[in-house]
Length: 436
Image (cartoon, rainbow, N blue to C red; front, side, top):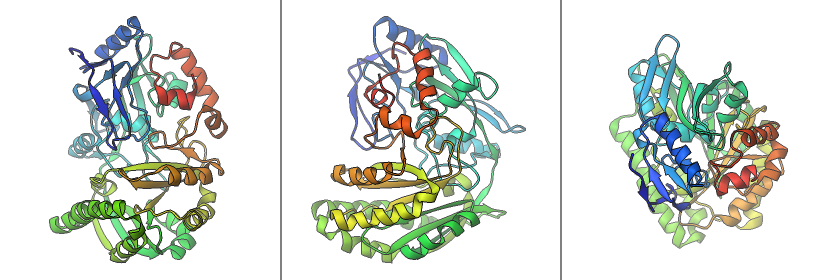
């Protein structure tokens, strides 16, 4: 675990960079705790950085950056209870494969699996679901290294307030060293993807949510075109996409061709409505079934910047109509589709769906395109509806705003004051969102 100094880091999207005073690669929870104590002795902050899939500065380390690539063991798998303990640096795609080998699975997921398990959890990563919520609702216990250098475990029965706060703690309460997941028996998902017009989707969104375990849709700006995705459990046998269809749809069209499209629209923004119109008309229906995580997740090779807000579910349709009207009012030219997902309420204190049935609206731009005006306009709209920004996606909200939309925000800050009075785990982003 020899430290490296002055090693530059940047996130996946390339919009966050940092050079820590030193970098270390701990192999155990004890070594994480030792690094925290050493950082305290040197008056430095310390953060653990995963794969850099957050668009915010959540992972930025100014003092000591801990690299979790040696903290990746699956410590235990109990197929009888479904409890699986994995260390913080294990990537989700490796956890998924390990679970599948033991006949287990996560009940719900987001649409990528490159993040570390701790990074995904700490930013409240979520998918879409009628009955099953995000990652924060699938955790049975956490192991944390605290600012005083001690290691603690928390669960619903042991230090329950810490458990409820730290499941989506943005690394501000302690460094997660291991997570015990509450998994379910492995299952197949049947995916039905269908193009549909904007008016029909908005008229039927309640129906689609009620009828499907996992429903989401994408709208292509400047068009009437949407792509709806309906995922439900299937008995089997699996009927996956052929290798050619998977390569054509998910590798070539969704990544290679889409990268080319965005390079064109980056140089010629006026072409966006025409290009989006072609893309929307080219959408095709497809139905297949496969292992759950292979349906939940997709490869994402085209780099982008993203902002996502959770709003009360009942506000979804009026919010979308107003968002669409902004394209005309503001003259925006946006090549990326807008993603809409749904989630039942969660109890983790800083889950974006805490205490309320929620709809998530995510907006993206190509990583080389300016985002400021577009993201600001969408943010103004959604914060007017008590929207809560995703902790790992770009936003400008601060503690003064967030305390108004999270009922347990003051409790979180008080717990942070108790556990980390010297702000050992602080960085510019945590100072923004939690205050200093």
